[in-house]
Image (cartoon, rainbow, N blue to C red; front, side, top):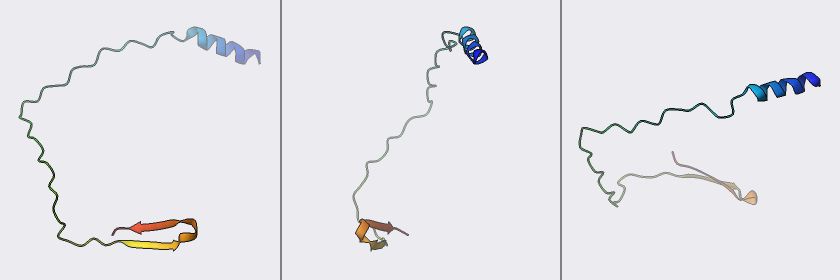
Amino acid sequence: MRSVALQIALCAALSPLAPPSRPPPKPPAKCDRAITPIAAPKDRAYAGEIQLKVDASDTSRRVVRVHEP
């Protein structure tokens, strides 16, 4: 028991009180090329089909499984 308390006391005495200082972060590099804006999304109808597989066999626990292949 004494050796454990002694080890804890030594570790506490030898550990630094403050973390080592780090250099300040560097500013981000400037980009040389022009930034092109992203086009706004458009609402339009989907031309294909969407399939859903629904498993509603466990309705007593209100569990419904849906899979979109």
